[in-house]
Image (cartoon, rainbow, N blue to C red):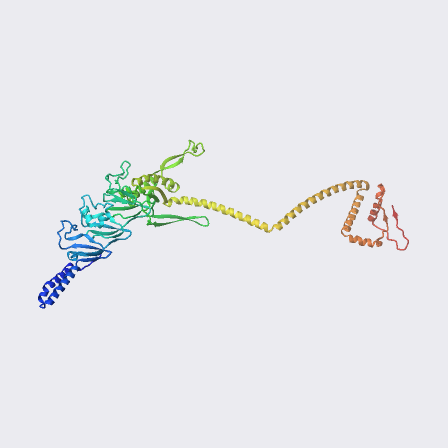
Length: 625
């Protein structure tokens, strides 16, 4: 607040008194009667003007005039600070903007001008009264003002003091705006408004017993403040008292999202996130790996490496260290939790907030449950077996399954992770309910299992993969060879077709030759039979000679068939070859039918032939029939 310094009252009084002294005593020293009268007149005028100048004040529109009475008043009662009935001291009355005239105003009062109180948007004014009735022993803050008189109680100090206004911090606050307050009575502190964002609720711990009008929380001053909700120890839940809205304590209802001008001194608002939260337990361990490497020949070699895994900033705690079958395992996990608006007051009353629930209640519980479940026994489904060790099936043909308990194995963290997650979730969820937190689910991350446990399985899997890979390579090579052969075959297709045709021709030629051989055999058989018949008639020697002749004739016929031009030439020169003998072949089929042939043969076989007769000697050719 800025205070404007005014001319002090004693200065204004000195001017007035000096004027009166000069008007009365001054003319006594003037000998001229006319000048003496004139001096008294001037002194009187100065005195009147001085008196008038102390009887008015002007207040600007953004100012308030505060009155401090100096003269002509009684003393204030003990303990009082503000004068209501004209006592000396700070006055309950204030001067609004305008021109104010009051006899000797600036002499009887010290008038100061103060700026009006302005509360900016998004903030509120916390009020402390310097005067009024004292607070009751059970009070920390004054009773809130009645709704109908709230504005008058704040703006009219006299009304406040005469209507049971209480001294000290007030429950009622000033919302944004401009106020013409008596700053002798009020001390104003500017505070930030309470804003509850979406996804949150406000849990209120009240220090006053009064009526309330905060958004969705509206009620008159309650008469019964017995705890309205408390958890009993019957279910091993946390026991906390929650009181009705308007009572002193933690209210059993929470404030919905929005902006409120809540007195942060009288009411403590704790914002609780009602959205689903993800709590991660990660990092904080040293991880080792054993890497396997396969050479071109299929040899497997292994090397070891390690690295420190830090705890991420987003993680609420390191990974959970558990012992399974004597092996140390680091298990990362994620929990989804939520505080409902109905449970928010209980959470705040029990442990003061969600972070405290996480650090004080649920994180120790999660670690304990993880060690008990993963490091102990587990409930798993298993098929029911008959006496012969065969699975029992139901009427639908499905195997009958029963739940059994057995010790947990390290590889269960990989093979039946879902069963472990469900077992942990079933146990940890009631622990969350005890603190008013709903645990939606628990999910495991990758377990950090000692690599020695995994190497044997990895080598076995790698060997199987190599075996399948080699088989696939052989198959691929065979297919590649087939493809190359097919490609080469396609490139030589014309030659293959030609070769196939030749094969067919050779097969057909073989058939033809075989047929010809068979025909030749039959022919020779028939010829042999004929020759036997001839040899019986002619004798074997004559038949042999005949066969020679037939052979020569046959060859001659074949020659002339192949070379007809020779025959043509020979016939053209036939006159040069007139035979000396003429044999006639033919007959009636009797014994003389072969006489001609026999003659020709005999002539051919004759060792000596008669010399031809000289030309012109009249030789004659013999003819026979």
